[in-house]
Image (cartoon, rainbow, N blue to C red):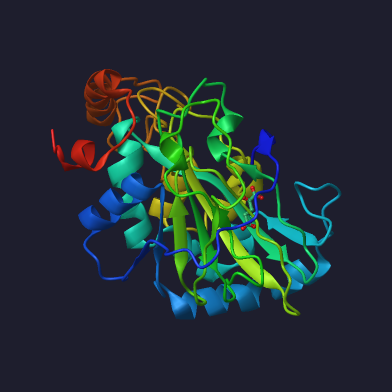
Length: 323
Ligand SMILES: O=C(O)CCC(=O)C(=O)O
């Protein structure tokens, strides 16, 4: 979330949305995302979305409402989702989502990580949220470098009436001083189990819930590995909790290097916390606990050298280049 906001635009009437089928090849999905600034993937994980909604229901019930127009006086928010829902642990590692992270975030970092996990539950009467770009959390004058890939899972139906997320198509390529105007935003309309994916530079916000039922979204956001995470994943998922997660999930939430050397523990891979210690005290396979050069770090440095030359907006053409 970012507080650098624009006044609320009225959404465009009957706009045509950028909706993709769940079996569209990942390259085509990624190209569509960077071309439009968002893509809706229809019914990507319906059963998991229903399970997550059920697992999270008591937490939503107990959550307080927001206290300002950004957090929403009729909006309930729940964080630390991975501890609370086993289905969310699968959604966060969904292969289609990770394939999109690979294609977008690895252009500007050697690793990516989970940045944020949160329920955004809009009750009837919720007003539209001021539009904003999530990338404005960071002090770049413009949004040329894609720092985040936010996603929103529809845990209920999303519609124009119930406050389906407002997105402004193409706004990820706007100059820094351009602000959305009335009619430029469209509501992400999608059935339960669908996924809205957008970019750090895409203007968006919660819609107005004019219906008689709540709208429930699960926001899972991914960021470049060299950035500070918005939600503190180590406190949300301390080692004694993360121990029960898969290795891939532990690494995704940050028990891993964020880039060459970034985040080391005792000079080594932070994931070694979860691995049996060798007699020398280091993780199996390492020379000593203070070892600082591994093939992984070398590979990350190589990636950084390439990435340094590419600080430009993503486009379908840059994604097609495989170098
Ligand atoms: O609820 C939504 O649809 C989006 C909310 C959002 O963008 C935020 O709270 O930062």
